[in-house]
Image (cartoon, rainbow, N blue to C red; front, top):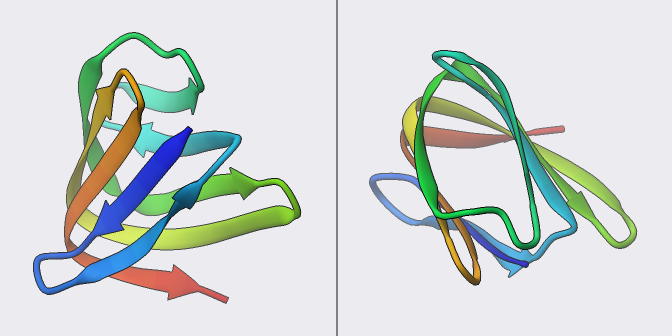
Length: 83
């Protein structure tokens, strides 16, 4: 599925992912291809994207996830990739 991770200043990540995992205000959320459209408010915590060849992790501050039919968009005030 398509995934974009955006900070208030720039696009931090864009690409195809196998899954997206994050901690929302109501608990952990896992988003896979075909997930129903939804929106989730995030706590200040890592967001993990699973790729074909591994994974990448981003710390998102004051964020939300907008899940759409073709993928997901993660928006945050500040987004930093965690090494």
